[in-house]
Image 1 (spheres, rainbow, N blue to C red):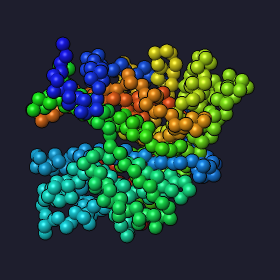
Image 2 (image 1 turned 135 degrees about the horizontal axis):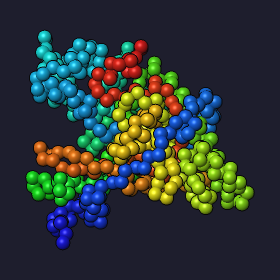
Image 3 (image 1 turned 60 degrees about the vertical axis):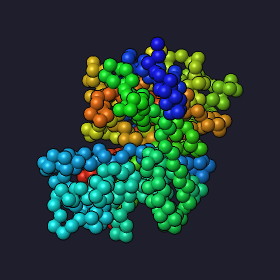
Length: 477
């Protein structure tokens, strides 16, 4: 007997999801997701290439005008977690370290010039924080990170969006065109558009390049149903089913619709000021140059296989050493080559939470390079996870066309069996939520993968508001 009424079925249909998909999700809640079978950490010489030399940047710069390049920026998330401690201060009235740090260094923040117009004379700490994060002022606690003022300059204070426009012109342009795609929450599209209307003409004049900006939202049909702790469908107060975004892995659908040859992926909050960007520009260009070189080698090998002139041992060695796949036989060698390619920057792990590079064994015994999140690892393999020396800063360059110039269908290279289930709440009621394969792990599990060490200076995220006054975000201009 179905757990869904006719009204439920209509709601599911209107959400763009099939009943079969929902039933599969309910089954996944019951059975859970298998842990990744991690074998060993990827290290220099065994899955990670050492830092590249500048001649790889030359390869990119000499060839970039032959490609359509897009910079893809996941920018959907609200900045709520960035201000978590400040919200706790308002809620409890108890001062905490982060809030005190904000108050002590208020004038150092790029948003201060906007904030002060909301502050009464001799404003109390409570009034200052309310003016910063609530709708009594800037309302930063409800805005996406892209709209926040990140960096101070002599002539302007730049938002995260503005920094991505500036950065895009410096490494992600070809033929004087800068193509940038933002994934945005529906409620914030108008805010992005308003800001971009001001920024684009200004930056086109400043950098002498044409900007082509596009946006998309995470598709509702990729949402997953929420369940109660007993795995029955969770219902809102009005009896309707609750759907939740299935994590950033759903953005593979958005990525799949991008018309490009090369796609740079970088999170919205991982930007630095102009004066600190030289390493980022150089290493992005070097990673892209390596990708161009490897992609051409793949195409050459496929053509050699098709003409009967291939040396299989040479190709197997190339696949193992360059593409992060340890295959035992050559029967599937052409299919292994003919996949999307991603080149990923990896930094030394300094304690950041999140995924890292590991060798993972699939059910057929093939070992591949994957970016693994802690939630994907069984407790008995925690020691392997702990021994990982590198961290994924979401520094990816994707090559999404095959040897004949056709776009790959990226949805065919997902591992649907990856994901994890977490406990959340809605209006004080506990629920279980499903995170589908992440964009750079399960959603790209069947890509050819190249990991390369990059310096820590290329990773300057803003996870907490006080990160914005750390060295990685301080401009000397």
